[in-house]
Image (cartoon, rainbow, N blue to C red; front, side):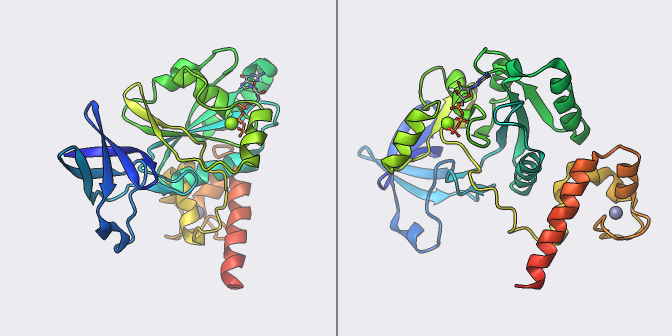
Length: 288
Ligand SMILES: Nc1nc2c(ncn2[C@@H]2O[C@H](COP(=O)(O)OP(=O)(O)OP(=O)(O)O)[C@@H](O)[C@H]2O)c(=O)[nH]1
Ligand SMILES: [Mg+2]
Ligand SMILES: [Zn+2]
């Protein structure tokens, strides 16, 4: 039977096959070929006398380390329009990471109840130009959540963003119970106790939601300088027209991406972030 691992605890895996959940152990062989089953894995199982065994793990589409989950297709990347203030560097890093992992980002601008109309349309302007999907939210006020629910179908979705933007609030509103701790006090208590968190997939609206937030580490230094340009979707329609094939849109002449920046068709802050990151990646390679 084929199913998906929705939970793993102490060597046992819980595999959802249709409407049923089977408790399984992994066969020993996984220890030798470096594949340890993780939540999100599509697996082949066999069940005998109520004892289930994982026989095969399908090739992973992608894998996140924090939380440890495979086959994530979508990320709700949460920002607050205020408190904490929007940080465009982080915004760009999140987007680059999503592209690198082939995860579809949905930008969630939360706490719109705290911002003016002008501030909201400024934020909208940035995301519109990149061409990625976005939702304006007030998780506390129940605004915009249906737009997120509609996007769950067929996806494994992780909610990510820095501390305090409202991830847990969004998660709890979507799941409909107090599954995640919100606010600051409970979070601190949890950390103090070093509670091990096992991620779990929660089935919702035809898809799965990961119960722990993602991308807590925003390291993009593992990227190769040449691959960075592929991770800016709005560059792609211009890059074919650059004079040099393999143009890095950096110091090359007759670069259509740079022209598009000058014409205002690509947001300058995105291009500046690209150049800064490219220089960082290049200098790391040099001194390695
Ligand atoms: N004004 C306003 N406050 C909100 C909204 N959504 C969440 N908050 C508040 O923002 C604070 C942080 O929310 P959380 O959901 O705990 O944020 P988080 O992203 O899970 O934070 P960490 O767990 O620390 O990463 C809480 O006090 C929430 O009540 C909103 O739409 N508007
Ligand atoms: Mg939280
Ligand atoms: Zn170019």
